[in-house]
Amino acid sequence: MTARCSYSKDPNICRHPLLKSASTISRDARTRRNERVKERYCKIKRRRRRRRRRRRRRRRRRRRRRSRRRREERGKRRAVISERYDEGLLSL
Image 1 (tube, rainbow, N blue to C red):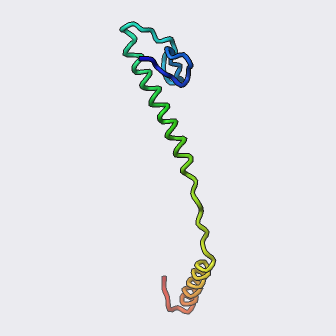
Image 2 (spheres, rainbow, N blue to C red):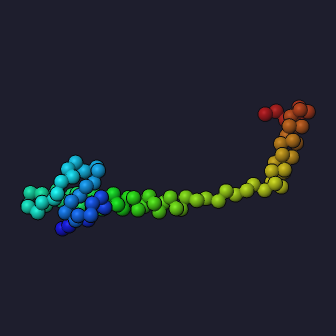
Image 3 (cartoon, rainbow, N blue to C red):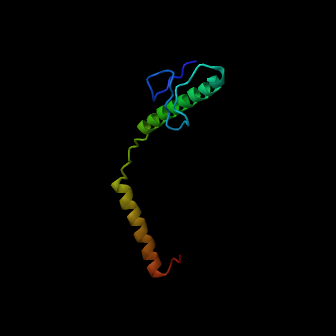
C-alpha cells in the first residue's frame, strides 16, 4: 500500500495541504489505517481536479447571432401594437 500523492515525490509521504499531518507514513499497524485514508483522500482530490479541467474545456459556447430580419419583424410587430394602443383599440 504505497500512497502515491501528487503533492510529494516520495511514495511514503503524503503532503496534502488539507490533511492534518504531513509526516512520513510509517509501516506499523497503528498508522496503516491512517495511510489508507490519506491515500484515498489524495486520489479523490486528484480525480476532482481532473474533472474540473475537463469541464472547463467543454464550456466554450458559440453565441448565435440573432438574424437582422427577425429583429426587424419584431420591431414591426411592436410598432403595430403601439399604434393600436395609441388609437385606443388595445388596452394593456
